[in-house]
Length: 230
Length: 230
DNA sequence: ACCTGAACACCGTTCAAGT
DNA sequence: ACCTGAACACCGTTCAAGT
View 1 (tube, rainbow over the protein chains, first blue to last red):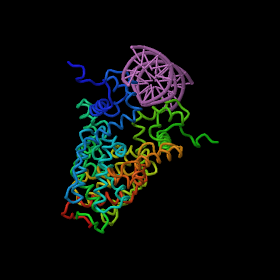
View 2 (view 1 turned 30 degrees about the vertical axis):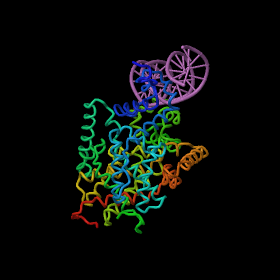
View 3 (view 1 turned 135 degrees about the horizontal axis):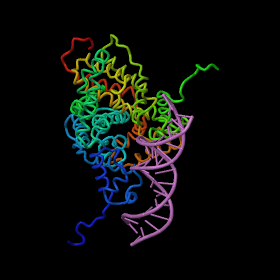
View 4 (view 1 turned 180 degrees about the vertical axis):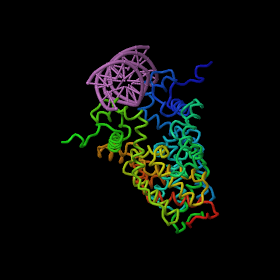
């Protein structure tokens, strides 16, 4: 084994953020503590503070990783709304493997280079659609927020590693809804099964993206812009 | 002073939840601790556990208060989408005075009577629109999530009581965006001002509701239902 | 430069008592 | 029935040392 092969410090920001995300994925964001993370690296809690100023900066790094995983589609000739749909699908594809951590991205998209790349592409498409810069900012913020809402499950649904505990809570929730008065809450009782599914993150993502894009198209200013796209 | 006038225990769940919401409003959800809440009532932390099983049940009570503040419009003769728009506006009106606590409602709408009342009305309108029970559940979940996204500001924007500290952070964020390369992020830089406004919760709520309702209308099944509404 | 160890000021929560 | 007091097992973070 030569000395320069695999030469790297035990700790670096990337490896720390990676393992932090893994912990959040496996056991929930609330179990991700500095002390637990340090223990996972066989190190004192304070060792991590050489690489992150505080815990919030660690969470920033996780959000950055999530945005970096978005495969932003190249600008093409398709209508703006099709390209927007593809971009939203790409964001969802990056976030949905990490439901416990996805919420971190909500207010951090402008705080890292990968996030800015995603935001820039979205705003460009909205400008192409004919929205003013202000409208594009408003709508872009709303759209990213809706996307996070799609992917973020109720706390405690993904966090328990024991599938029995999860299933138990699942059944309990369904039973609670089924026990409601069908006279007072007929639609809630009728939709109980699907509502519980939605609460645990198993949403129809294609429908949700469709709904978002359709909404954006509908509020588009009527005067058609110089750019392409129906 | 007669004995039966104003006779009530120092602590009861309603008063506790009320003051808890006030603390969250004033100084942020992260400063709402059991110990701080107890101190506010001049009582030992454990005294609160006579009225709430744990902190999560306290948060449930706050969410219930928020849903209870929604003035659900009476069913009327207007088209379903107008009634839906009014319902969403009513929810927004109840949540937006409490941006720091609004996020609590996301996954708790089915956990209290006032929340169920709101959910039932929304599902009824979606059924009237012609959606199946499953579709209505999917779409209703998505809509409530988007609403929360409208009202929830970036953490730290409302939490600091000092307006100087808030303004300072505000300026810092705007400056950071303005300092970006206009070649790489032209649209982000152009929208910087509005993006920062949106991040701090000052969204165009009417536009957002319009976008949501328009999206719901667009994904509506084409075969028009027996019920009224264009 | 990178990590340790002890300490500080907090958390939510349990348990056994008090009145 | 309602509240207290002490304690437990945690937090994030500071500071002063170690190598």
